[in-house]
Structures are given as structure tokens and as C-alpha cells.
Image 1 (tube, rainbow, N blue to C red):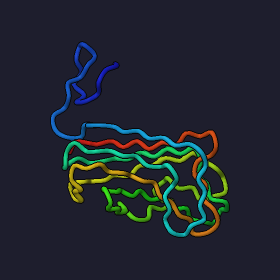
Image 2 (cartoon, helix red, strand yellow; image 1 turned 30 degrees about the horizontal axis):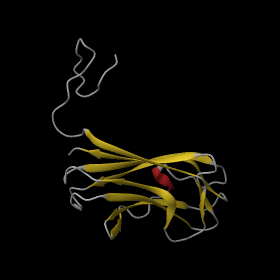
Image 3 (tube, rainbow, N blue to C red; image 1 turned 45 degrees about the vertical axis):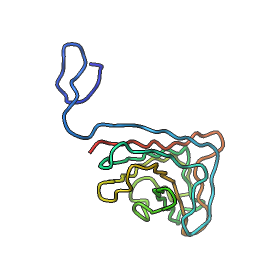
Image 4 (tube, rainbow, N blue to C red; image 1 turned 90 degrees about the horizontal axis):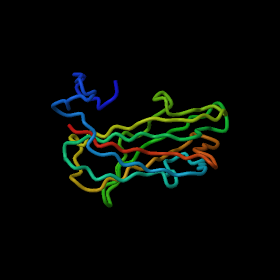
Length: 165
């Protein structure tokens, strides 16, 4: 059956009635960048052009940022590549969750190149910045050697979703 999925109550028309309560996507903002980014930094650095800006419509919303990159690779098999998402509010910048390591499934620490994806969740009700533009910026660091994100010809993406509380 095709149609709009909402409350799982099927209708003869193929459409479904919208469910009451939260959880609906209020808006989606998509940003892409191409090319290859490399770093050997042991401190967080911004991944060039890897950011998305969203202005929430409600102070109680949640924001989920989905990440997709064509390549995530460390140069050797024994290093830890770490990725983080930073939420920037006007001139204030704060890391959402600090270090997120390979156990979250978005890191690859071998010398083999693989596409990678992941997501970050921001519960604004516990850390309310107000209804201002928010910039979510992808950051990365390595414990040794070199990390590569993306490659020439790949289109990498960030998708920010505002979710109703």
C-alpha cells in the first residue's frame, strides 16, 4: 500500500490519518559537500564544508542530524578515528556529546576505505538555545597517522531533521 505513513490505521484511499502527539518531522534541511578531507590532528578540527544550518520552529523540538560520507578511512589498522558533531548557536559553540568512538558504528579504523554513516541526536528541551539558527558542524581527530573523509567525486551529506516533541 502506498501513501502517507503515520498511525498505521489503513484507509480505503490508501492514505493514513496523521497520528496525534509528537514525533513528526517538522522540517528537513539538507547540505552536501564533495572532495576529500584529511587530518592528522589529535585535537578536534572542523571537516571542511561539513555543516548544516537549521532554525527550529519550536523550543521543545529535537534535532537529528544524519551523516553520509563516501569514504571514512585511517591510514593504518591500529589507530582510532574519532568524529564529533558540534552545535553552534550564534557566537557560542558547544560540543554535543564529546568523543564518539568506533563503537557507535560510524568509524572505521582500518586501512580499508568504506562508506560511512551515522546520526547525532540533540534534545533541545534539556539544552534550550531558543529559536535561533543552529549550525551542526562535523569534526574529527585521530590518535595517530592520518584520517581521510570523503574522496574526489563523492558527494557527502548532512541531513538535519527537526522532530516535534
